[in-house]
Length: 340
Image 1: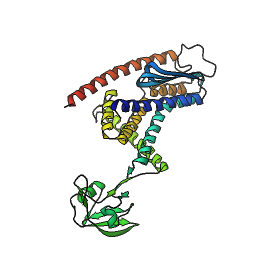
Image 2: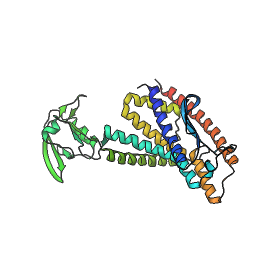
Image 3: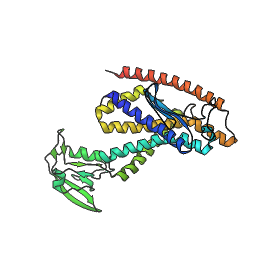
Image 4: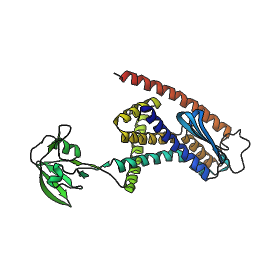
């Protein structure tokens, strides 16, 4: 998979899931949707179904769902079918559905990884024993916890690897814990493909679909917490302000392509979480600002003047474009500086 097609794949699924969230909930609450578009610019493909135009556009850097009633100058909105005809809760559901779908996408992508590639187990527990290797011959089983190697207690997987790697061909005493009992075994590490001693054990375990999905949501939540913690520290000056745009994303995608497909999926999951969180920030033109206006409407008992709200979003969109230019310039400059 080339970097170009990998980038198209990643951008497409991030945008599609985000806009699908807005679209699906809008349809569910009875809002007429004029257009569902992926990308910007000239149309590559267009089809009208039940009054909605489904468009694929040239530039895969965004997308949008155009709903009836969101433009204050639109005067032919069917009664009860406009965005502003719905309750605050219904409109809030439509707006938040986009970012929430990004979080769902991240959980699904990680679940796929955990099912097909596996998930590292914690501590010193053996997830898999390779057939015909020294570990199997010594009697080690999946689920065993390695307590000590050659009389030295080990605390994590890295310590297991570093200890075993130096004992090629040398009988090595192991103490494992199985069913809360300590068992002493002797294993003779063999030389692996990379020239380092190994015994044929792995801490990566493939999960069933339910467990994989649960851990996918857990991973997504943990990443959200880490990102929010970093943003908080960045705001107070404890961390440097580092923003990346499409250029940085393509560069990271290129690295992922060279590393492997599962790394590309993991990167897509991480980017999807970032996109969902970014859209929830109360920045004009983003979903977070629309949520803020809905909250203000709920408190005041009446909506903000639509023309004034749209003007604020328009100004915010202009500022986002300016930020986009600055971030892109910094990305290109940094990549040129770091290039050999």
